[in-house]
Length: 280
Ligand code: C2E
Ligand code: CA
Ligand code: CA
Ligand code: CA
Image (cartoon, rainbow, N blue to C red; front, side, top):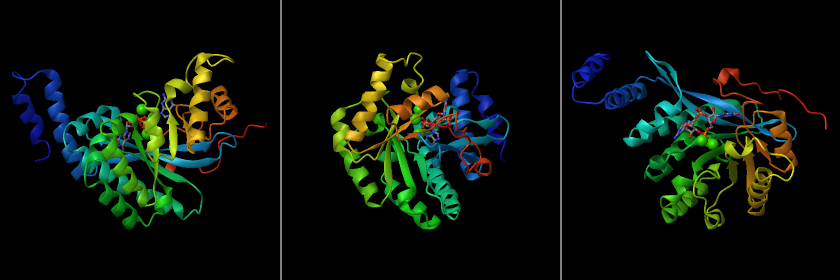
């Protein structure tokens, strides 16, 4: 009965637009995917900006679609967010990332595991419980878990967000503000929310003009200084070149993530030794 729905959708073709048809198909397939274990997590390393030692991972969901191949989250997260599917999907991601991290914990290395949390999932009353259960069933040290939230998620309702974050932090986990600089940042928000890590969006890191004295460089400098002033660690996202790595290091950025040091990949592909060393 797995493929029944495919034909079912075709019946609606005459009355629905192509887009809607695809969407309905995707939503139905995603429900099945959750039930049939078609989701997988890829992991991307996060590295110390200076030593380039591995310090953590970000879990990034993919969907091994039966006919369309490996789908990136851009293809299905929004659909999941538009209905309540993001909640069970997000809970699966939490459980799986904690399970994998607990296995790696046996390597007795110091690393964190970052997991993305969507708006709906963050506002869902079950999140606290889901995090607690993922930690309990895996046995993972809560300090290793980092939840990544975007500014827009937090800004939807700052008071509720503050409360939710405080409860989450009481579990001993950490919180990162993702894609920093792309949303409508509110500086007072940074001051009032218990955020541990600021992730600078790759649009700032990859700015073409990062020459000395450029406004792009100035912005990076200000964001890093601001974060440190508020006692947060800073991660630069989307680091693709040695020049970007060197600049972030020079400006005092703590950690970096990007294709230069590690592409997202399945857990068995993780390389635990540093990929290269710069002599400085
Ligand atoms: P994000 O949280 O900002 O994750 C980083 C994205 O940038 C990932 O794309 C990653 O592959 C990509 N990336 C990493 N390094 C580089 C680089 O050097 N250059 C460039 N151009 N890109 C780089 P991905 O895996 O396609 O994920 C896209 C977005 O989907 C994520 O953005 C996140 O917002 C969302 N997402 C991924 N996994 C999950 C999840 O489990 N739950 C939720 N709610 N959202 C997720
Ligand atoms: Ca993220
Ligand atoms: Ca990001
Ligand atoms: Ca992003």
